[in-house]
Length: 370
Ligand code: ACO
Image (cartoon, rainbow, N blue to C red; front, side, top):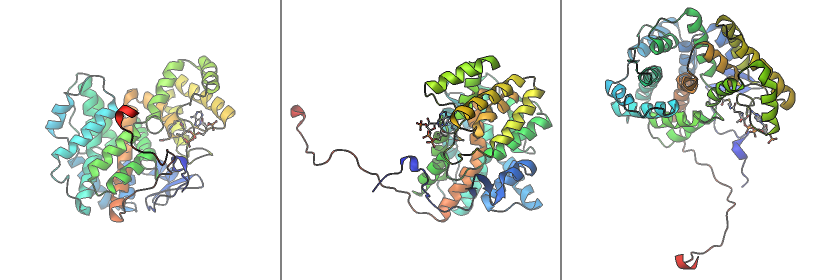
């Protein structure tokens, strides 16, 4: 038995949700470029869950159900108030989503119908949790969700308590579409491994949130924003990046396990970053990002991934840096739940083997003789 480090190139299962073939990303066979241009996040969610775009009445029904399920239990709001100050937003989200299960009477019901209803609740309630937690930590009262708003609009509304602009909603909705699913990425794979034991959907999602939190995965977008802040200005970029590369420090937001010739989602975020930073008078952020890209791509041949330009997009939308990864989770909830439901449909325990490299033929030695 020989191990493949990081399971690179290993095909772990069949899936009908999302494909990456020759660098082209599709959800349900539709190029993500087309979806980013024409679809809404709710349509994309339906596509991921059902394998086909919704008809008008199906879309309306989904939106209605999402709206009707967006409020979170008062007990959870009360408990968000007790979280220690300064905890990581992804740690708070992980705990809060885990708590949701405690108030869900169907938490232990593993039927197909119950898992679909729980997927709706998870998708609808995650933005409410993130917004409520953000307001509570700032000493503000949470804003109740508006059941008539889309997920993108509702989230921005619940964060600020004000009506977001159409431009902000559109940009945010597009970002949600671009992050919605990505085949067997690390967090989705952990969700699938977890539920393959036939545990409940909440356990799978909690595992996924914990996995997304890491800086090599979803945590990279926050790390990119922190790097931009640390660099401070366009003129500081070359020295900072050259130093980092010389010291073998990874530049967050670059490289990808699957895409070696560029992440197809990055061009959308690049364009959005250009437009939004211009509108908000923050063009230097975009210019710095482009300069970083020139150096990293020029010297290492590494291209930006989805996280790189999303950082300046979210900064332009006025979002706090430590909300970037929770926002990723809001979007990926659609893909995680799709994969969990697919795993349950055709389940087999996921249990690989290890290539043992430790000592052999050892014996127990009494403690005072070691
Ligand atoms: N900056 C500098 N060098 C890099 C970077 C980077 N961002 N990414 C890869 N490299 C280098 C590595 O140092 C390594 O060089 P070496 O062969 O000289 O040691 C080589 O490229 C291969 O890198 P690996 O880490 O082995 O590639 P892997 O496929 O395992 O990792 C990953 C992919 C984790 C995305 C990596 O590129 C990385 O750490 N990037 C930065 C973090 C990041 O942006 N993560 C978000 C990914 S997208 C997502 O999850 C949503």
